[in-house]
Length: 238
Length: 271
Image 1: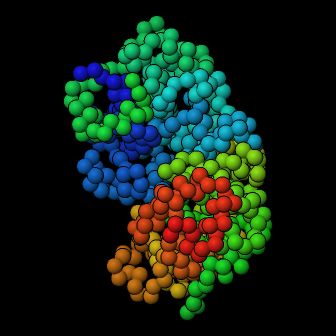
Image 2: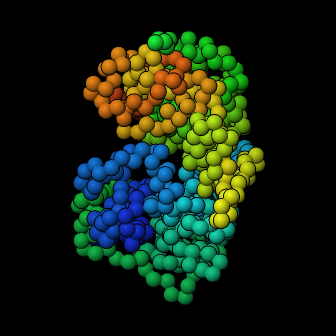
Image 3: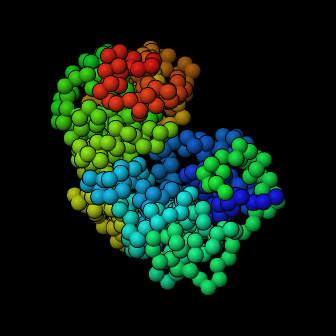
């Protein structure tokens, strides 16, 4: 059976929560949600997850806790959470923008607003998910720093951006100056393609591995249990 | 005990142009839309609005009533970007104090506790500091010496909130999964107007629901407005879900046309 691009993205997102232990997985977007649920059902069984509203739920939907926004914010600042946010723009140091495009004082395009990105990035690990990797998203400089990147964080005690996942590959900041590095490409994607779609000079190691293959069990869980409606393919096509 | 019941129009008649108003709910959830509609029918304008923004902000922006907005986001949830808010921002229609969700919460906490500010580990390094040059920082007086943002108190002249049930004295009860920050809005305000789906006897409140659902204390409430369907078209779980069709209509209809329909009836469009 051919593994789809969307399924490699699911695996790449799921891996973000590997080894996290008993923390809240906060996925934003379809593929991160499928990924988080896959991680919980397989290699990270202690993860906490919500029903998308105010309840903590098990894999079968069993309610195990109450997490309204005010407690959610306390959990953020307590650090027992790993969020995977979206990014309308992201730069080489991981600064993320979801507020507006253009000049903040008179935006060309008003987006959501900073939301919780400033507090997230200074308190709990924050990864990012970009379903359409392009030069419009991977920019030299974001128009509004919402999520704080490594250069702006200035060594803040709890700041960490474990990974960025896009439809082309996985990226991390494991370089001396924490500039973004290509950690893997999804099978079917070339390094040149990633470079072409990125608006800044990406750190590319000599050997770039492929994003790992899903196991047969993982593939079955994704296709038959977690996302039988194949919502993932609407977020990332072939 | 004081009977605080009044109509939405009576509540709004106590508001003045230039005031700072907090609006409860979150996004397109449990917004006090009956009170917002009454506000839109009034002449009150030049407002500073403090909200986890939804269609309340979109409508007041479309109607030109906002001088300044304090918010971390404005969204309709199932429609991520609020179209009227977007249009107003892209036209530079009002001043914006854009702060993070947690900063916002601590600003309300500070106001509720009569503190000038509270320190938070949020905002530093982000452009929240650049676009709000008035924000100050504070250094821990203890050994760690860490620097924090000193979020100023978000003191409100008045708060507007909507809950499921209330008694005539202003004890407010929520029956949904999330209290949002409605009690904080009331505590942070000099006057608070509480609309509810149904006014009931005090004893009725805890007949079938746990006392923990008594979110809002009467000592923080000025007026109680019985407004069945008063959050429509936003959600008011468990009484009703968001009316997605009405919300879509709101998002796709030019404001003057929508307003004419929506403001005329006391229950709002589609109810």
